[in-house]
Image (cartoon, rainbow, N blue to C red; front, side):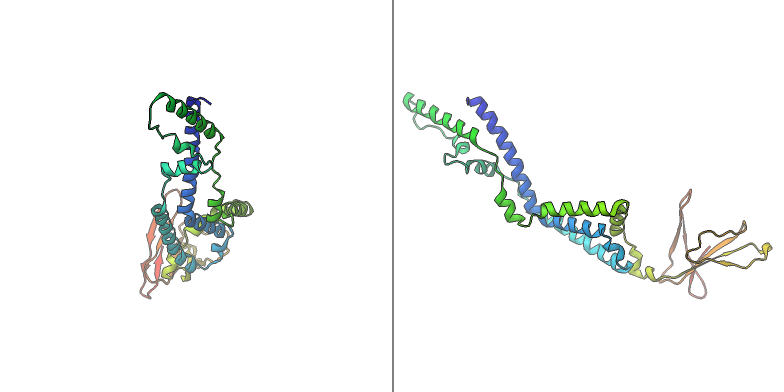
Length: 258
């Protein structure tokens, strides 16, 4: 192998080795965050958060956010990119000649005889560089992940996503956006709703119940919502235009919106 070809081969091996060492460094730094994210997705896809009470789901969310941010911050602090010495060492340890680092050596005597010996030595180093393989880093990964969770967790998450089918995105979204109003007791609010037809009809108010699919009322009827709550809730109407109404307090201490 001539010197030009050898240096080109060495450059490619150094770059590939750096990529492998960088991936290992990222794994070491971000391992807790990776496991945390994978376990969260698995639990969400399995529908566990949907089975929790509104209060418990809302109370868990801040804990999950703080834990996730803490693990990301810890990962950032722990990450140490591989140095040039690390890359060279990973290749050199395959040969007693240490061919990569030895290329920077220079002969002490520049006379003709030692120079010829030095050229032969460099030729041997170049040949040895051609025999070097990219480090597999299997021992390092085994020490970091003895149970191969880097494979098991992604496969488990994908399997749960396939089992959940079309419900998968909704489960993740609900896990990340629970009803935070439950922390203030919103999950225990009871809302009464009725429709009051116009006076000219002479009809009594129609009380709305859960499960009613269609309710036919005369034009001009008025819908009233009443609830007991610690503070005035908001009524958000979604249609062609979004409209927000605040409940007004009644003399009885309840809140009403019309």
